Image 1 (cartoon, rainbow, N blue to C red):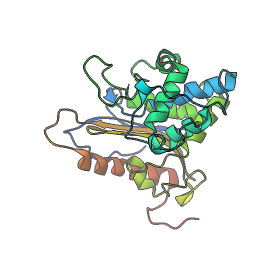
Image 2 (image 1 turned 135 degrees about the horizontal axis):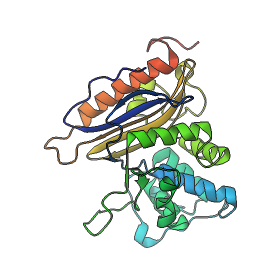
Image 3 (image 1 turned 30 degrees about the vertical axis):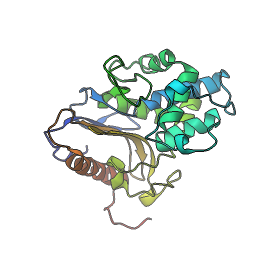
Length: 277
C-alpha cells in the first residue's frame, strides 16, 4: 500500500493509485469525484487517432488541416511554428509532448468531435471524456469544459494502456509512445526527478514514465504509468479549486509532489537521493 500525504481541504481532489500489473488499489482519496481535467481528455483523442492509423483510415504521413474557426494559441508549439503543415503522427506527438492545443483541434476536426467523444464510453467510462474542442474563450453557449474525469477511471485507462488493453496492444503502444515525450513534469511527476526533456528510456533510479498533465487557472491534473525496479503503478491525481477566493496552485502542487514522492519510493524501493544502480 501507499500512504497519501494530507491534501489541502480547500481543493476538490480525486486520487487513485493502482498496481499497474494487478490492478490492486494501493491508495485513493475520493476517486469517483468528477473534476474538470483540462488537457487530460486529449488521451482519448490520441486513442482515436491511433485506432484510425491502425485501421488505415488515416496515414501517419497525411498532412493536417487547421480550420480557421478552430485556431487557438496558449499551450503548445504549433501556433508559433512557421510551417504548420505537420503530419498526423507529428501532430499527435505535439499533443503528447507539449499538450499542443492547435494540433489537438486539428486532430479533433480530422476525426470528428462525436467520434472522439465516443472513445471513453467505448472503453466503459461513464464519468470521463474529452468533451469539446479547445477554445480561446468558453462562453455559456459552448460545452461546459473541454475535458472531465475521475481518478478511478483515469488511473484505469493508464493501467490499460500499460497492459496493452486500450483497444489493442498496438494502439496502446502507439499512444504510450506519444506520451513518452511529455515535457511537463511540474506536478506529481516532479518528485520522480526525471530529466523533463529526455525520459523516453529508463532514467533516474531506473524509472520509466508515461504520463499526461492538464493545467488551467483552477486545476492541476497528472495521470500516468510509472515503472521502476521494485513495482509499477498507474496513477491519477486531480485537484480543482474553481470558485475559490484564493489561487491554490502553490499548496496543490506541494501536495501533488508529496503524492509523487510516495509513488517514487514505492516503485524504486530506494531513498530519494540514492544513486542509480
